[in-house]
Length: 349
Image (cartoon, rainbow, N blue to C red; front, side, top):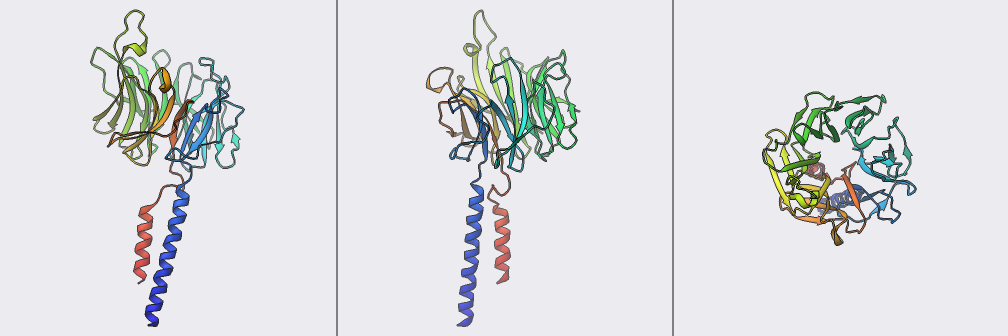
């Protein structure tokens, strides 16, 4: 009898321990994972916000006195780098700087000698480097800054040959994908993280229509790159681009085999940026469904690449843009670790 009572108490204690562990992990998984920029406070300026995976608990984390956009997470989930537009969104009047923001304390710090044309900061997977676009060398090129040494290196040289922007690191930090406009049109390219071995990823356009490709993003596994594809008829006199568009597509391309998986959207949709979330099956997309009416603002959507279901996360009349996602420390439910712990506890018996 004493053995059974001991055994019952033992399993009760084990069950309580597991319950506490589950509660702890669930509480940790509630940390904000999506960062984005928006002008939803009605002051005609963009600020940085965070929210949960399902679009709840939206809160501003940047200084409301400035015009801030294009945030990107550090891999530890505690900081973001973002672009502060000192021209306050005045288009071709470039005057920007990069800052790093601690999400918890909301303290900002400058970390580099900025150039007015610096754009699109993107943090490396180890958090030690930042790739960005700038005209500091005379044309839009990809640069990388080492946060430890402060050294900035130019990776592309487009002077008189086109331009490159929207760099995105591969998950292992060895390669960078980017958008490039050159002699073969607007395409997605890949290069080594040191700027060597540049090669085009997206297929050449062999049809009569014009195809523009934008905003490459690596999948979390490093196996795929997604990007947006707009197809237009060649212009006739007086035609605007929106009148010539014949297709809007999201392309998911295998980096090794070059095979593409095409996701067709209504041609009125504008998909301007996005990112992967959780696995190779789910992405966030920044979409404007129409250029007029109630759907003329940009929203953030979750899109399942398998079911092709599109879910609106923001549902706000303001412009919500540039979503980024991070797992961060203990913010993803570690089922594999829980299984190991469970097995260890069972072995005691």
